Image 1 (cartoon, helix red, strand yellow):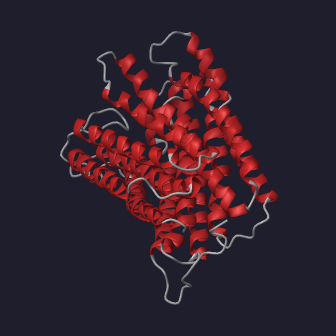
Image 2 (cartoon, helix red, strand yellow):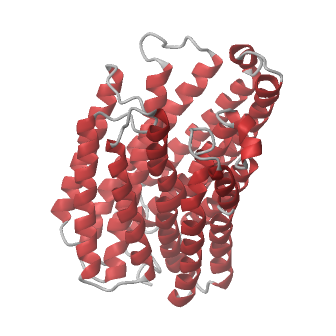
Image 3 (cartoon, one colour):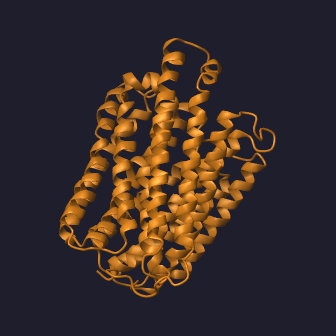
Amino acid sequence: MKYQSQKVALAYFSVAMALFAIQVLGGLLAGWIYVSPNTLSEVLPFNVVRMIHTNALIVWLLLGFFGAAYFLVPEEAERELFSTKLAYLQLGILVIGTLGAVVSYLVGIHGGREFLEQPLWVKFGILVAAVIFLVNISLTVLAGRRTAITNILLMGLWLLSLLWIFAFINPDNLGLDKMYWWFIVHLWVEGTWELVMAAILGYLMLKLTGVDREVVEKWLYVIVATALFSGILGTGHHFYWIGLPAYWQWIGSIFSTMEVVPFFAMMSFAFVMVWKGRKNHPNKAALLWSLGASTVAFFGAGVWGFLHTLHGVNYYTHGTQITAAHGHLAFYGAYVALNLAMFTYAMPMLRGRAPYNQWLNMTAFWLMTGGMSFMTFVLTFAGTIQVHLQRVMGEYYMDVQDQLGLFYAMRFGAGAMVVAGALLFIYSLAVVRRGAPVGKVAGEAA
């Protein structure tokens, strides 16, 4: 670690991992409710469990992005952060907002819009935290060296924060409401977040493989161009059934099929960088997570997204378990695994140690990835049956759900495997065995 202000990232990563544990445990409980629907129905209803599961996911991923920015920007800009006090203030606001949102959900106070259920004061808190972050990180970059990695990272984080303004627009017309809602949800995960993913992945490849910066930057610009080109108009695949003009069926279908391209490019980028790399970096676990993130993202976001993005197919599959299959694998590959790659790379340095517990860390990767892959296949088969019985044959929703019990039981088993992997991952980074080496990490200054 070259700069003292990078230590801010450790606090962000630690809070993110705590929320990660809450998120996967909440997901496991939600999976069990599918198997036994009356579980905690009066104490902790399913809609509250689901809100905690999805909101914790969004918040910890954002904390991971912010922490990654605070870690890599000083190195890229070749200067200390503008203000560590502002960074800690931002973290404090986000933690208070997160706790406030959870308490609100538990007592029945929420906005009712999926992913945007936060009370109004929490939304304002998130906006204030985002402004603090943008000021802090932008002043750091503008005062130092500018690289393709920081340029793309800043573009993604600025657009991410600006799109949050649509969270405050909640029109009475349901069609308009869903349109603005997708301006956040889609343009985050299939637009701005892809820029952040590309920047962090580029940084990791630069550090882990030793490939020349010029090569990394050329790949990054290609990835970003395809992500923005396909992602913005690809939003149209969410406009099929909410009352927008019919031309969105074709715009959405055509451009959303192209969204597979940036994810294929990111996967190819990661493997080509490792193939061309000259460095035998000691942190093998970080390299595994980086390659795994790009690969699983291609299948989850790219292939599984493509499977039901065309409007003729989506007419039948929309809102079924096929959607859940795509969502779980896409989020895990594109953003969860990427954040865990960054944690794995950075936390040994932040704690002044060589890479540690790598075998446990890599075991956690295979547990989580295997569990999530099995869950995706199970939900895909469940969704296929659901489409046929409910959307084609016209059977009642609850009658169809009764016939999916075996799949939900298998999904719960896969979820337990993911939770075991997540807890093992957290242990591998949080607990250092006695006698673990202390000092500079080989290759960290490269």
